[in-house]
Length: 95
Image (cartoon, rainbow, N blue to C red):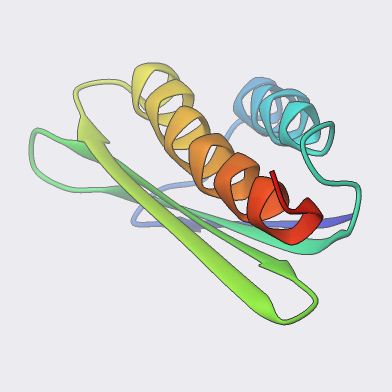
């Protein structure tokens, strides 16, 4: 899976990039057909926003989360996109 990280209005640290890669690779266990995943980190006045866009052949998934810290926002966004991918996978195998 190809993971692309974009940071807006700041430069992401290596520690944050490693955390993103670790969290995103966990969603691959729900569907191994994930082709690419684009994580957009935006820092605004007092909030830090995370947007995750994942692409599986024929399907696109998106999750947004706002919070005070990227780590918490990332965890919530990963949880949201994991739910979407699980639902699609269950539909695809006919459960």
